[in-house]
Image: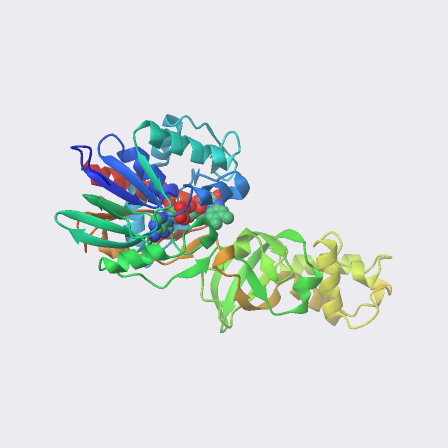
Length: 406
Ligand SMILES: Cc1cc2nc3c(=O)[nH]c(=O)nc-3n(C[C@H](O)[C@H](O)[C@H](O)COP(=O)(O)OP(=O)(O)OC[C@H]3O[C@@H](n4cnc5c(N)ncnc54)[C@H](O)[C@@H]3O)c2cc1C
């Protein structure tokens, strides 16, 4: 940064959601330069919410967030109300709409609009974008910091905000290099894992059901204990299972674990048996006994697994034992997990820079004064529904105010 100003110079490392929001917020009060390794800022934002960007959720709930230091997450979230985020975006000229589950989207339904209003607001306020600058080293120099790029350029700033993201979706630029910078400055980085990604299943059932989507309750089990549980959409894919409910289980330790799917969570085992026995007294074929209870192809696979003979025989030939087995599978199809999809497919990172090393009032490091953090680089991940971007905006606004001494 060539000092052409008397203002304090802030270097923002990473032009993603957090870096852009912080730049807009701090611009004018301090001179902001965004150092972005990519050719353009905000690449990941364009992919969010299937191109619609689920910006935040009106129903903020600490139970939707995960961290080794969850009390710090809570402190951060409590400082920025939902109406403050709304005000921030309305102030940029972005009109919003929300769905029945509190998920907020741009009214125009375009993620590109979220990026564009942020970019223009930053530009209008005099933020300098230094794209193609891959920061590989930060060191303390005099009363500030020296940034060195991968091609040897050197820049100087009074304060630094590291908003370089995590490891998820590395094609968008967030390849974990921010963790190296954080460690260089003395920070602890907790174990990172892909989260909000699909699960691989070790069973022939999923491939037969490829493409089917349905609502279900999914339990993650390990050594006979329930690790986590989610209700919502699941999708059978060529490698296993996807869908929001399944992806939300991917943040846990899935080694030697299994998922148990309840296709009729609001109905008891007795209810299901009642419907199956009723169907067993019709003219249906065996393969159609679950019609009306679960999607047809799912039902046929369940029946095929429970009944080892011709599925086109009359349903009246089913034995009690077979009907009970079908009901049990509808209420708890168990599938062993063989892994999860990689960072390329993950939406977010579990783990990151340890939050106990960060002051939640300012997002300033307790280890290295003058260094601030915001966004996914920190040890905080959220569920689907706008919670990860909410974390990015909240931590960015606090960091910007912290830098400016507000
Ligand atoms: C497909 C997909 C869909 C998603 N949908 C949603 C959604 O709808 N709602 C939601 O809440 N969350 C969603 N998320 C998660 C959300 O996008 C992220 O949590 C959020 O973007 C994190 O913001 P960030 O600014 O911390 O990091 P990022 O957005 O990853 O930005 C980090 C930036 O830093 C740059 N950078 C990294 N290292 C360096 C370096 N050394 N030097 C210079 N620059 C560097 C990167 O190039 C990148 O531009 C989605 C994620 C994905 C992948």
